[in-house]
Length: 226
Image (cartoon, rainbow, N blue to C red):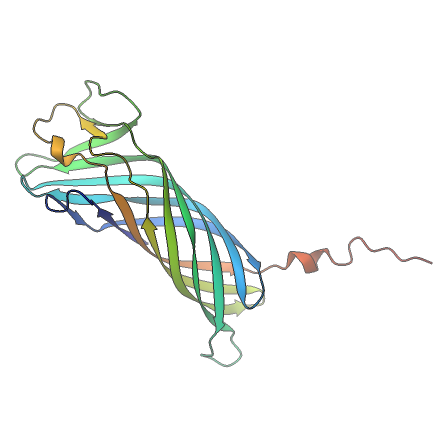
């Protein structure tokens, strides 16, 4: 489960961000290194978004984004004794994060009137359809930095449960100030800004199967010489 906060560097006085809830699913592989360190590569899918109020009018905007996620991290493990005969560790990790924007939808709750729902049209010139948000001059590749802290505990032989609290500090603007366009609604040009980046706090739980590939290959290619 994750929460997303949108940072508008140029419009903090007019665009009031709220927390947008979402989720992520992923898998990872880890490669052990020296001194209780490891390298981790991760790939998955996440649903994030933006939620904010336009101050002058009180209009409420909510957008849901779907991403393909890729990340890498260096992890440092520290032994932790909680229960006898159960291996436990706590860890810290950091590394780069990449999101590729694949889709989404949005909604507007105006100060006066009924809710209007929208679908996204990527890299499409504005047209007559008033149920679409036309997106141009956007960044579909978003880059950020992950910093995390977590805990792991052995459950069965070569298996463990892991939980992590991770902060993703987005470094790339989603788009430009005029990257969004909606047809058929007057007077909302100042509200449609994508000059923002996403700050994500993610609490995750994973079940890990530990397999030593090097040991698994031992003996398979050996021959007895007489």
